Amino acid sequence: MLNKEEIKKIIPQREPFLMIDEIEEYKPGESAIGYKNVDESEWYFKGHFPGNPIMPGVLIAESLAQTGAIAILSMEENKGKNALFGGIDKMKFKKMVTPGDRIKLEVKIIKRKGPIGVGEAIATVEDKIVAKGELTFALIQ
Image (tube, rainbow, N blue to C red):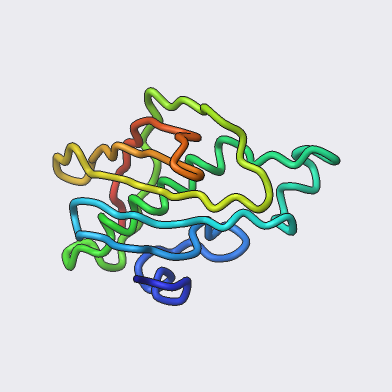
């Protein structure tokens, strides 16, 4: 298990844009499972939406991407690099995420060729899928 401080040693994101709270397990180059605890004090709830707070889908996708980045950037040859979005494909949002939810974030790397790769990403809350899709990434220095 990795806590936030250990996560920061692998990926470059920082608060308020660090979108994962812990990593349950990871296999460098293969997969990662993490969690985001959605708190009512999150910065984006001030405007999305007043009186009806819903986590933006794009931030769920970012949480998944950061989880996938743990799998890729934990590889010895990728230490010190960054993983950027190259694309989001087949992403579907199935359920709203609201304050108090704990999102389970699972990413499996399904393709890699040079610095480009694809991760199959699934986010769930209480075993119900809230988002699912494929994330393409590009590694840079």
